[in-house]
Length: 365
Image 1: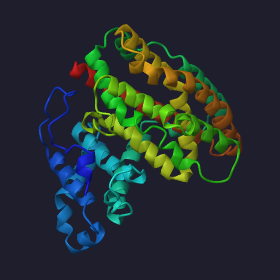
Image 2: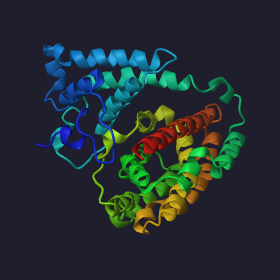
Image 3: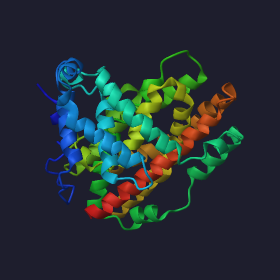
Image 4: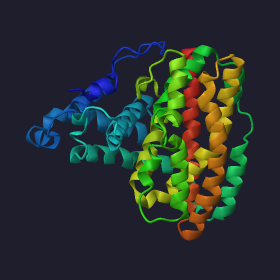
């Protein structure tokens, strides 16, 4: 039987060759190991009812981490990492990975739900505290969205962008691909989770975005296939989550946030705003990677994913603003400010994740 231990490197396992340093085993690593065992345990809820101590070390670490990450002004980086890794391990059960069916034995475990809710409640309060929600409620939503998308479509050159374009080495580029594969090999999966329901123009536009992301149903044209080809060009592992231990917690947080807002239909507007930012801002980021690859004189295969995304996401960004975000603002005038909240949250999380990725690349180089 294939277990989750195969899918994910163990918390304290030796790192991939892309990573240059071994990390000290912490109490959080040990607690994560225990959690991995719980995930694979048959009839988890019943066994914990009979013997609660099976999860004691993990639960103590969970409580400690929540206080350390979200309970004061000086957040503990290791606590953030632990919490987002645990949350992701729970969330990923909502997607099907074409692996051993026994890996999903605890998919609807009440215990896992309780762990997820503990983390999400504290984490989302912490995230919202970083945004002036009261000010968002007073905005002219349509104007705010138009102004934001206009600025993010062609942003000023940042220090990080200049570093990627002018200084990042081929080793750094490989490291970028390793981290990027975490999302690039399963992209658009979150979007697929919100498409059901009553037919309308917004739903159909979102479906068009999804269909293009999935190569119109042809695996050879699916965007993740192009990312896998980039990895293969460098002899890297093309299996999803192969480089999980390299992924900064800031990147995991963005992914977990998308799991959350696609799970709760009450947050449909937040997700719509977030996806609008993602599609609008994407081409500018991918152009940086493309310029870097061209400077390094990499092959067309090694850059094909960026070229495809630049071309298609420019179109997707227009669709998301004109045919999704603005129509939703008209349909839900009293709640339309949540579109801007979703947009601003996704931008905040994306900027934070991008900074963490650049830092990781610099360390690897």
